[in-house]
Length: 196
Image (tube, rainbow, N blue to C red):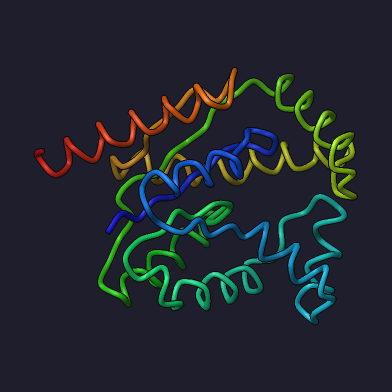
């Protein structure tokens, strides 16, 4: 019954870490990025709308994102826990997520923040662009995303820090070591909250 959120700047390895952490804690990873890309590739109406924002390096508007996440959190596989990746990204989305979870009588247990220097993040993005050939991986788009993250998503981090459920993890270095650090930090945090 663990409900987690992972947050971090673009290029911080959130997706990779989300998969490892979700597997460790035995919950499904719920990635808004995957939901968006799936809709774009299937050329759904929502996907077409989302593509306009994604290709320009903008966040998909709250009303589109909220609707997708709300539907996903009603699925049976996430009733006993989940790890959210990529949502919420803005303060209004935090309030929307609070409402979604409150309607089910649950709340987040911990928020994992990955931290890494901007220069390292940009280097990772360049490498990923070469390996995966993603259309949204250009230096201009990446820098715009990073700027948006610092301006908007930083506020989300502050909200969860204020609630005392933020667990910060050094996101620099070897991915395997980062996973181990994150697991240890979350388990320690959850143990202190439950008094275990």
